[in-house]
Image (cartoon, rainbow over all chains, first blue to last red):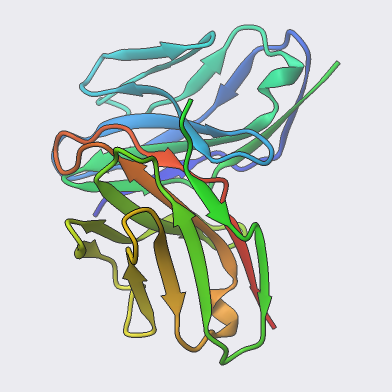
Length: 110
Length: 116
């Protein structure tokens, strides 16, 4: 079946630290992969996506590379800011369906 | 930027009561969805809705659940007789396109439902 597993949080980092949030997936076929972000009090928003193997999605300094050989789509940012504090959801789309992970809460402290 | 609006943000109800969760999708969107997240678990798909009918639903979406688009702007999720295990955050989402083309969902901020 289709599923996403992402690292459990919460994650607490100091400002300007390097961020990695791990995400691995199981899928039949060739899914598209996504990271969504939920800021406090808001809905989930699309952060970045990749639609095929070796694609790199990027936005707002965040990056993730679609790795078919390791079935992974890890989220990275070189230098986090306080404003990056949010919950991050990894997701895949297979057919007409989205499958989400549990979300990883990130808190960045000054 | 247009957004999906959900009300209420929190809903507390007694077991066995009916609840209606409300959503106003983005005005030019055609596809509507409900998802839920039980605390500590994954965000789960419940149902998708297009052209005034359900297009897909999950195993979770049993006879206790129903959706409606009563007036062309609201999109509601009704739970007829709530159970304790229905306690979750419920997210509404909408998109302009569906199916294979749909790559971007717009989500509301969620309704936290607590069943006592």
